[in-house]
Image (cartoon, rainbow, N blue to C red; front, side, top):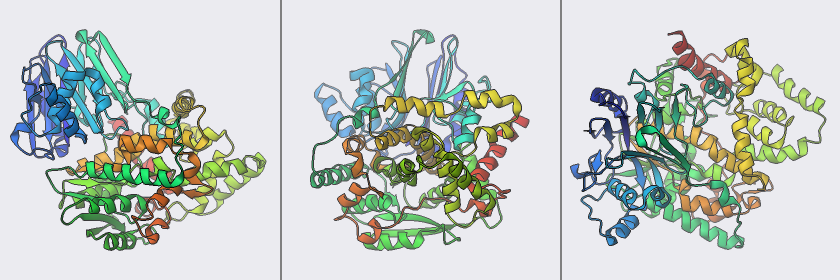
Length: 597
């Protein structure tokens, strides 16, 4: 895993110092080595975290044998050995055992179609020095980030993190209040927007081919996850369970491939425990697992994690995330994220990654399971919606506003008052908008109060729900649960969950791998009928059944518990619930302070 950076100018040589500074900015992503290639108008930079082929032969930027193609690559393609054999049969001679070289020669042979063959997580750039073409690509679920600034007349600059691009002082840094509106609504910024008007994220499952001195720009979405939901498997439950375990174990095995030690995050819940259990079964020697807890017992899952670790048989490590009236820890975690980002679990995730980095360089994570198998409480809320819609609006409004007169606990994860208020607010609208509103931070009117009356039109005209509507249209005709699973996989998953995991782990030079997001596994699970994911009100129904011979009952029956931090007790909530309070806190640190500078 690594950090990549590059700059191309169609008209004049690039200042190498800019790319050097960009690489320095993302040195945490690759503390083991670095490299720069200067081709005059094209400079590519790389910071290396050595995972596969630790030798200097696998150093990047890497160049093809004929000196035509140059690659900088961040990620892991887990099926690289199979692809390597296929390429060798066609005459390709490899000099390394790294997947980087396989990715490069796959592009040489198959061109833009090569990304469709990759099973893994990646963001990379390949420069064709003969045709003067730049190819940028990102993995299907957006596990690895890729930012860019494109000047159609001059060139392009790209990097793994937004702050690296800001090292080029020629890049405009005007704030995008459309992105700020999105942030205040959701606590994160939807792709392709960023905090800055002229800098963008390449969307998941997309590539961009730039040629003819920037005059020809082709951006293509090469994989459509919605299509995987269309055809449902005709298999019976026992066969589905067998298929789930077979594909999932294969996914875990792929992610155990490494030339450095591999461990696993462990909370004690189904998702992380299933990953750890199968990793242990497919691992020679000791498997180390890692947990983070809190002093507030309502938030801590350390006892559950310890019990799970003892059952699985791992070497377990745990630590406490404690602020102790010092917001330095909170601010350090916030600053590790290159944009305003208000998932408060970023704080324990950042500290957990720091703790884990003392032991291993690769860690497995259970992320993605909730979006595959309907694990969040929001999916139950979607089902309750069908009952609430017959209730008169006046009663729903009363039940919603009645929560304003009750104090919200600072020491309990998402208490019932917060849930009730969010639920009845959402139930006033369509099913699709209700699902969007379950996680809303600030209403449009709230956002106008924060930004000012002059932004009223912008707030309503650029409401992020319009993006959700686009994805709902792509999923039209699907079961309501499949629609919501798909929309979450296009929004919440890549722009919140995976951003949180990537920045936290890479800030401390470790690589996180997510077996639940394997393309083969995810595609099959999408074909499983919706009623087997949320059966009545039983979340992850078919996953739990599939894991019955893998995990004990005390793990399978453990209630869902998120990785939320007790942020309400750490910052001044000023009468707001802890989610809004943290969103406002980050806004003031990352947006208000910048705008005033």
